[in-house]
Each structure stands twice: as structure tokens, then as C-alpha cells.
Amino acid sequence: MMLSAAFIFVDGTLDEEFFRLDSQIEKAAKATDGYLGVERWVEPDGKKRNSTYYWRDDAALKAFANNSTHLEAKRQYQKWYDGFHVVISRIEKTYGDGALETFLPDSRAKFRQ
Image 1 (cartoon, rainbow, N blue to C red):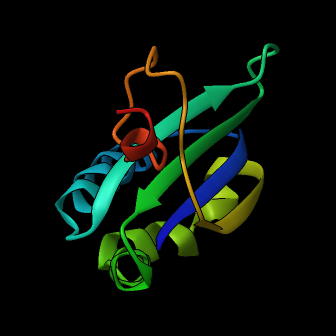
Image 2: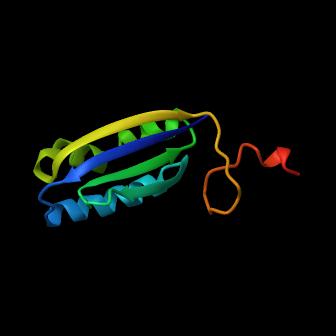
């Protein structure tokens, strides 16, 4: 069963170190076996953001969560964010009308043939 990890946050003061670590974390996520993809949203006022990462299974999410660069950034979050919230969810199914491109499998595709 797939998982998602939504990182919801409000930017604070983002410095050079933040952008360096953020880039490394993005590369680490993509290099993690079991990484499926990421979707990002910004509220209309531009203040609150959401990065939702998708993982094949618990092992993949755990591997990323224990990445040394990710852990380093987590220790310093107060320097960069005015607040954050994380939501970990198990995904039971995904589906749509096929009009949107997605990296997630369509749970209903086999029924539309």
C-alpha cells in the first residue's frame, strides 16, 4: 500500500543554507528506492505551502525520513519556518478521468477496459 507524507508549512527566513539543504533533500528523496513523486501547492495568498511526497511503502518513507541531510534540516527548522505540520497517510486507491497526468497508478484502470 502506498503512503503520502504531506509537509505543510509557512516560510520564515530562508537563507543560503536552507536552499543548499533543500536541494540535497530533493535529490535524496528522488534517489530513495520506493519514491514515487511529489506534488506541491501554494495557497492563493502565497503564505502556506504544501509538498506532498508519495512512497511505495513504509520502508521507503522510513529510509527517506532517516536520511542524514533530511535529519540535519529537521534539527534547524525553526530558523526557516514560521510553522509546519506533517500528515502521513496510507493511500487505499487513486483514480481519475485520465485527463490529468500523474505518477500514481489508477486503481480503476482495469475496470475501464
